[in-house]
Image: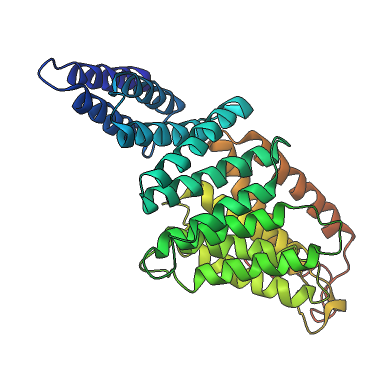
Length: 340
């Protein structure tokens, strides 16, 4: 049924764009706009693929002298290629080529906002390619920094926050084997915090939750001598993210965040002031979080994530069996889990 609906949308788009009374420019713009509609909040990969096809058709009929429109079509096609599930390195390489051309053209046309958007998407594309060892992460960082020349905190708070998040994750994706690793961790935390100075829970809930979740990860995994303090700050960040990432509204994002919170609890003593007293309560709470997110991952077809958290549950079960009772309980095996 979903495929037939996509087919109907594409047929309607092609019929509308085939109107002989419309100019080639108008038809190209119409196809681009319909493709953008398909691309927003897609329910299946078919819609992304259909959008790419419509962008291709729009580019083919766009008059050669419509330089700006042609560049916009190419830049939008690149974002669809970037969003294509399982597109792999080939789709990313195509997107990179399109966006590198688009940045040059938008610069020639003196379109600073469109140039900045293309730089942001170019950074994302290179970032993904770097994860496949097909590009340098430093090139992604450079693209993000160029986008920040226009997307400043005052005029473009949402874009500024997204760029700070992307910069931070880029810093954290770099190898941690050299003497500058701690500096990059500090830069990542600073970037997350810079973004959080601009967005807030009420006006930018999605960006706020994204930054809080990722800040929690940065704090949790930082190579610091203040492990307990960082983990406590991370828990606070995850709880803030969960004000937006609810199970009802954003189930996958919710599952990711409670999995991160479980990881944090796993390594945190029940009483930070008395770490020798163990962490039975935190282990139990972590296990409950893992069980809940495994259920969500299984229901959403995220089999790999479900397997990982199932293995974590098994490991926690083994640790609970071997862990001594908390000294403050006075009762063997007494546990106070955080969640029921």
